[in-house]
Length: 447
Ligand SMILES: *Cc1c(COP(=O)(O)O)cnc(C)c1O
Image (tube, rainbow, N blue to C red):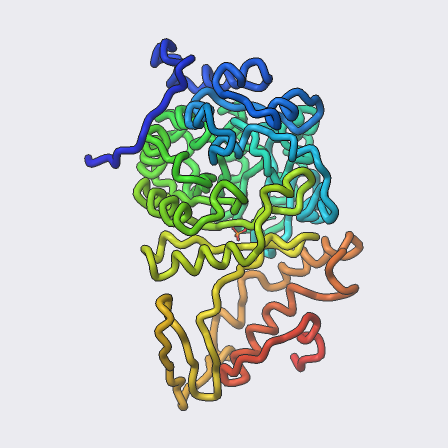
């Protein structure tokens, strides 16, 4: 089997560690570096890093020997290093920063379970990770062992899922679900699989990136019992793609688990079209499909990682058409205040009249699509799917949660779930004329 050649690295201090230890995830976990004195044995620390590592009470630092080996020991701007080694910039507060910027707590019917979308829910199953990202959106809870969810909370989460039949997709995140004790993870997956309306389970994990040796044959066999199971990893820079990560992804793929990648757009790390192109091309070589590219959230202490939204649009523009279509992620802004993920993309539609749509391609070539004159709109009165929509009535569950909770960016009484379908509907009924709708416009429309 032709395996692409990606590097395999070990920092000099680990050269004499026997392979059995290096390749054992328990060894990697128990030898994580977290203090200034340990980290300076591997990296030549900058003054800014020294100040930050000398502080107590910043959110947790922990780096696996494997991951620190990917860093340039002499370069404080190394893109892998910047992701997990703190600097003193992290200590500054920024106006507009929020502790819980996505209002996840406000959308939690039970602690640790976020139900923001009609048919899927996010389950925060642990606060622990393999290593800790400096730009973490859940820095408010992650890494704090006191904030770990108890068994009673897990029971309450499962109980909510059991009595909420519109949820067909459960996303396990945290923290990192793959650092859970294997027995506990298996029990959790077993309990989820026992709920008939849960069709798919997804795991969001950076363990394959921080500690690829955790992806053992036993783990893959265990996970494969729970199909359909999907997994998203989190790689931000091509330097994170190694022989070890390629092998971990190969094992997961062979276990039948479709792999995606979620990246965060980070100033000084990957805010560059050429880096992103190499990243997505290397990801598809290891059979990982780029899924989302996120804007950096408005979280305390991460202001120095933020980029303008336009940078993300420029990157997508530099990927679409220029490389394999399935290598292009969706750029999303997770709306502050709990609005959810909003895709932002280059505009390829220049104009639209009644019968013509004028478009440009990735090279700037302009063309016109003539619209049909005789289009018979879909007849929903005879369509079985329209007459019996899967989520009928289900959306009130979400709205019920929103009501009486903090709705900072939404006008009072604004029914956003309803508006979304109204909007799609109206665009179709208007003979495909593009008519931008303002917030609340849907409300006075005839039903
Ligand atoms: C991201 C997210 C999901 C999943 O969204 P998809 O677009 O389906 O990947 C679900 N719930 C919450 C709260 C999320 O933040």
